[in-house]
Length: 140
Image (cartoon, rainbow, N blue to C red; front, top):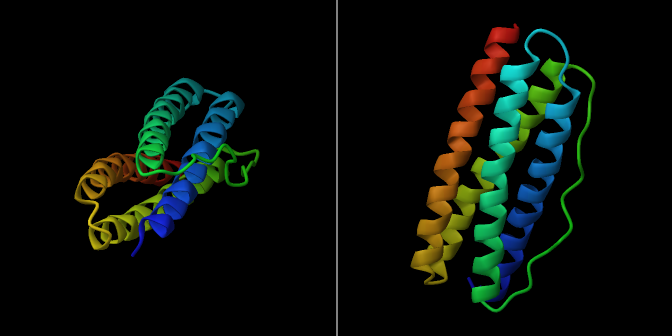
């Protein structure tokens, strides 16, 4: 694994984080009803975590000689709380899969520090996945 491929893949991860920030904030604004505040607050907190991840990834990309993307993956929107949480859960599942791959790629490229940085991001993403999973169980 060369650094160019790793940088490109980290940029894909960054695009996913940018998508998550926008999507989660938009979802937090769209939540209505009696459950609005706790779910909206959670989505805003998760979006803040994703902002930290985006910053960490961008800094790492630059340190490795790349240029961070400014283009998010496509934003997914829907109208119901359940559908929003399902979209958000799917995004977290994808992030978990991507970061697990990225850890291996970083290790193969000799980027041990990058691997550890991504492991920390993965732990946060697991917490997000857990939160969305619990909320969806409550919705059923």
